[in-house]
Image 1 (cartoon, protein in one colour):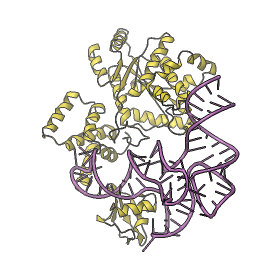
Image 2: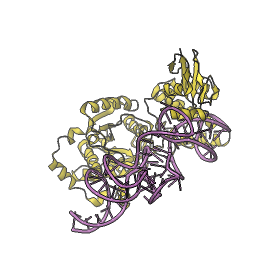
Image 3: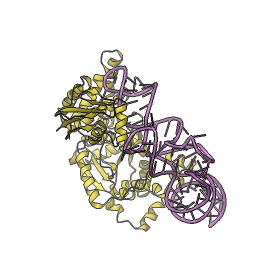
Length: 399
RNA sequence: GGUGGGGUACCGAAGCGGUCAAACGGGGCAGACUGUAAAUCUGCUGGCUCAGCCUUCGAAGGUUCGAAUCCUUCCCCCACCA
């Protein structure tokens, strides 16, 4: 690939790039010295579920690899032990060494669904942070001022609103920046929320006499609700290790508007291609549902295996469009007559009798496709009876 | 160390002696409508042996016929000043 071709490929879909000129220079130097660039990417090991939000970044890393560069994938085991800096909830329990190892393995297994393992260097930041003495930390902190840190958008906002900022949070960007120094990153990638931290990496590299890294940010993909960024804690995510059925079902519930973004950022479709589809939809030549189906199928194929998308799509159409039953559903053993409330709870479709009662009263419970809204109903079990709760929860009764 | 402001259900936030299982908003769930879209509309959203009862408003005691609301002690959080 020529330098120009690389630049076109590598800078697609970015939000911030500091700076295009520097990236070009680095690419030229690397080519002249016949080596690849080192592309840094950090990950938090406490939540080892990779979801589509992460894929946006992973795709970009893969593009770097395809252009001949090396990805330095940093597992933030040390920072993970300190806890979550965005201090929303209670302090995160410190992870044990074993737990970290397990999570790291799971991470790799998932990440390599996108990345090329041959061109990936996996590093743990405890390697260099774990051995630091407090003295080293103090020396490091001396390089950054409070004013610099307060420049970060969310810090200044919180400060103005009299909301707490813990010292650890201040230290966090510093630690991340130091990682850049230790791995001699040429480029660091992250979500737009990482911009400040990434830039601090540049500052620190300069202090240590290194050529500052190029910083590239990518958009934060909205989750299934279409508003908030995709994250595990908000429950609006699609994990890449989920079953084809789940991935497909979740993706079909996404809004039309958002589906274009998924095409662009997860499937890396070219903007022209997407525009063409949008034009067809606008002209009524293409049903948005068909587009969404394609999006969901492609994503399932990519993460669950080729052919799985088609299967998931067919099953989905059967269950929801034709209202037939899924291939497989959990079985529920019953012996003798059972109250409907107890039945729903036993099936695990309600966490309390009260919730079950509500579901029944609201018409969300069906037996053999017949709505039953009497909370006192008693069911005489028959083999093969189907219990349906809401739109997507099914169980087959056996006795 | 000093001053001030706080801790209420999943989250945010009202309530400041009875009418409080606790307004309102968000989230979640169900229903209608659909493309299981989205948006919208409606209902529900502590537990139970459910027209009744039981357990909740940082913790423990107390005052009272009656406390989320008053008093005491304690724990925790935040800001400001030093």
